[in-house]
Image 1 (tube, one colour):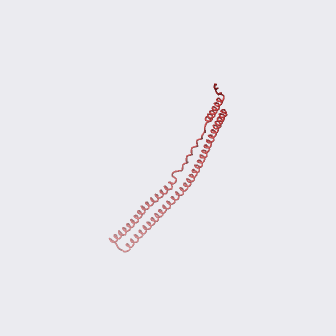
Image 2: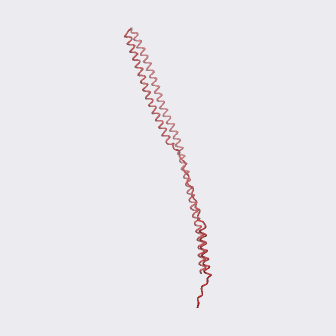
Length: 223
């Protein structure tokens, strides 16, 4: 009876040790598999995020080129308008100077044809000359004032162009960086076989003890 009970306990102990070892190994494998799947999923997410960033960056670069070209065209048109206005002012000044010359010549001719001489003629010539000088001075003064105003407007055009360039560049000043790959998951090695061997050994020791108990005879009771 004792031997059978010991054998049963030993068998259950050995079975439990083997089953425990198998379950622990299976659990470690399942955890390793789950960790690998999570790692693969993280890699896919990283790949998609980097792809989206590259596509967004490409779009920003295209918009940057468009904005820069538009700013350059706007500045070129503004400079062209200023050049046209300056050309018109110079033509108008030249026309005004020619008109002053004609007027002076005509007035001088009229004075000479009047038959006057002496101081009256000299005074009239001086008046005509003074009027011509004042007219030319007004033309020059108007040209200088217009030139100063043009320079200020062109400085404003340059500032607007630079501001547009800075705004466009701010969108592409920092290129996207590739995100770091996630760390590879650590693989669980699972329990060693020493625990199972120890469990089996304890069960065998228990069985050996049952055999020993079965071999020892009961002591005789004296009459």
